[in-house]
Amino acid sequence: MFNCFSRRASRRWLYPLISLSVVLGLCLGQPIAAKAISWGDLILRGIQVVQLSSMSDQQELELGRQINAELTGGQVRLNRDPELNNYVNQIGQRLAAQGPRPKIPYTFQVVQDNSVNAFATMGGFVYVNTGLLKLADNEAQLASVIGHEIGHIAARHAVKQMKETAIAQGVLGATGLSRSTAVNIGVELALLRPNSRNDEFQSDQLGVQMMGRAGYAQAAAADFMTKLLRQRSTPTFLSRHPATSDRVARLRQQVNPAQASGSGLDNTAYRSRLRSI
Image 1 (cartoon, one colour):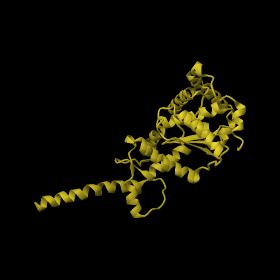
Image 2 (tube, one colour):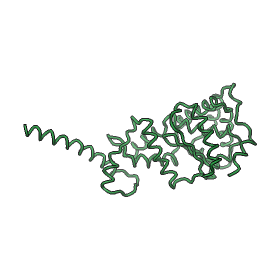
Image 3 (tube, helix red, strand yellow):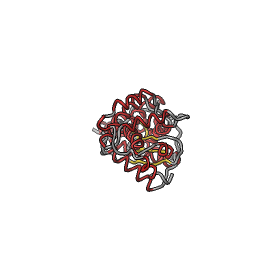
Image 4 (spheres, helix red, strand yellow):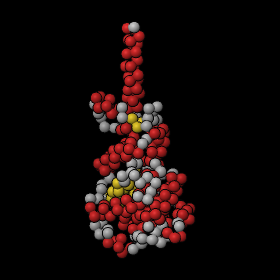
């Protein structure tokens, strides 16, 4: 009886130790640089494993918050003008309410950077550079970019890319991905990694659909993409979001003739909202 109990007790201790050793191996063996932490913190953080194949909306949101904290903590400089941020947020919320994942609490932020760029990360976080705001002719053109970025979030492209990157870097274990590694990859994806053509086409389609449902002139999406392609130097947005003439053609095909015109085409009104930049 005692031996049976002893064997059972041993097994109860053995399985958690095996799981902990796997997690520690993931954390210690990852090639991505991380901040030095104590053994106690390592054990506590090590059990925070991200399972990419079954990530819930709440888990995606929490990971997105951590990626956003890393980005805004030193990677990008946010514009703090409340009026401008409120304007961009109003556009974003108007579009997101018409998207495939309207229950995610989306966050729209203006980045103080003159390069023409916009990007997004999982969990509903969208970033728009002041350079892109200034290049757009009107609110509908800006809405086309924001809608495109919402499309990436709606289709969970960042989650898919994170899994692909983790596999390529050899840091995805049987139990999943350590949270610190996931955050590092998330930051890298947001700032550096381009999206695939298929992801771009899907986000374009979702963005145009959201524009129409929100009452924006859908034709502005193709107009702004054409304007980007005509720039003398390649905008940062295009280096991360490959743009070709066939993308413009597809955007025009996706426009509902009844929604080609709509709100957001007043150039003067739009410029008046950008006085602070």
